Image 1: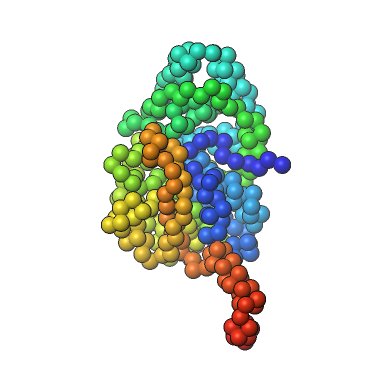
Image 2: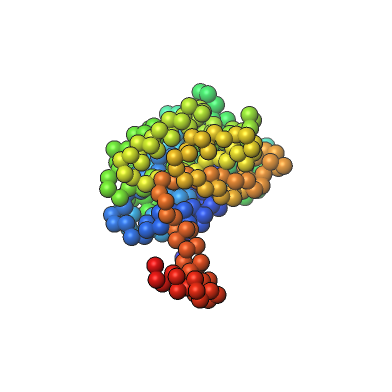
Length: 326
C-alpha cells in the first residue's frame, strides 16, 4: 500500500535522508508517551509525513513556515482535498492539451503572473502553487526581494500536476496537525512534556552563488542562524529534545568552523546527502550535511552497542564474561 509523501518538490527535501535521520532520533523515542512533534521550517514535509506514519505515539504535530503560500498549501490539502483535486485536474488538462513548448511557456508565464498578484482564494492559490512547482525549472521555489515567484519555465514532457492519491493520504495525516505561519520562535508555546523539535531551516550557503535560502523574501543569513541556535538553547534549557539539519560548511572549506563552533555544546553528526537541484550539473552529487542534537543516545548508537555485544558473544569469551558481569 502506497504511503503518504510530500505533495510538492522542495529544495533540500529530506526524502533521501529519512533513514539516516531516523537513526539519529533519541534511542528511546518509540517509548515516549503522548508525543508532540514540532517542525518550525516545514518545507516539503518529508520528515513530517514519515514521523506521523512511523510513530503512532505522536499524538499531536505542529508545523510552521514563514512562507504564507506554502502554509496555505498545507491547509488546503488538509481541509479541502477534493476541491483541490478537481481544480488541479482542470489546470493539468488545459496544460497537457498544449503540444508546443512555446504554447506551454506562455501558459506557464500567465499562471506565474496571476499567482504573483497575491489576491487569490486558497484553492486557486494552491492550484497555481502546485502547477508552478511541477512545471518550473528544476522544481525550484524561489522569490525575489519583493516576494514574487521568479523561477523560469521548465520543459517537462508530461508532468504530473494532479496526484489525487497523495493528496488524499496527506490530507488524512494532516488532520492532527496544527499549521502556523510565522517566525520559527513562535512555535515554543506549543511545546509540552514529551516534545520533539526537528529543524530543517534554510541552509547556510556553501558558496557566494548558492541560493538555497531564497524561498522567502526574508534572507536567512548568519545572524538568523545564530538566532536559531539561541532558540535551540532555550528548547534545551526547557528540557525538550531537538534535532537540526544544515549544510556542512566544513565539508566545502576545512577552515569554515561556523557550525562546529556555534553548536559546540551539542552533538554534531555528519551524514551523506545528494543534491540534484543545481543549474550546473557539475555541482550536483554527494556532499555531507550536519545533524545536531541535544541528547546523548541515538537509535544508531543503541544498535551499534547491541551489534558489538553480539560480536563479543560469538568471538570473545573472556570479554563476554566481562559484559554479563557488569
